[in-house]
Length: 260
Image 1 (tube, rainbow, N blue to C red):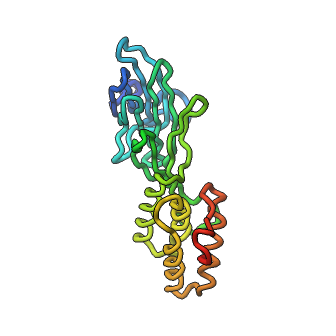
Image 2 (image 1 turned 90 degrees about the vertical axis):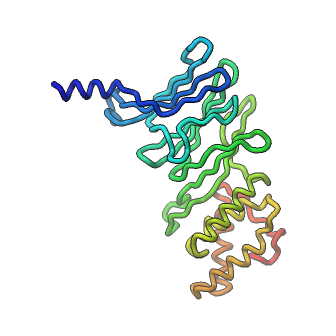
């Protein structure tokens, strides 16, 4: 009897996780115990609430399997007076960002899956929102991985569209270049070649030339004597031709004549 009473009380509890006030709204992302029947019954999950401050009217409520918080990324962050970012996880992995656009009487929400590598949403110089996503093993069965392929997503909003789309422009190129340099220092080229080449393809719109980096990668592949000069170039050429199939820009052969 005591156990049943304790469970009943526990199921009704909601633990505070995060709250912000912005643009006339209060946004909460709470942790709660799922009391509805189903696979999640008894699990710790989340609830998102959007309340209009002026009259305390509930404008939006959403129950989610996500638990609030993403490690160093807070559960709720006010990006400016229009956008609030909420970050949640599924059992310490599968991190997801939810962005609420609060303007007028019809708030909108969009989600971005960050998989196992959460990073904060940032406001760019032009006022747009951007987020970095590392997606693991995008060629199932073909990699000896794990390999984490980087993509910068930018929020696109107009009369017809509200969502994040991949960005490979000059502004995003710097982020890809940073990822390339960090990966380059973290592991031998042969073990992370696919994501190194993906970063270089994604950075082509930037000021840095990728031509010399391709030469350096080819030389590094030969150092372990696993590849000769022709084998190294063949392997790199194979990946440079495959990566556009998962959304990366095509290799600009005219910019680097004779390299590959």
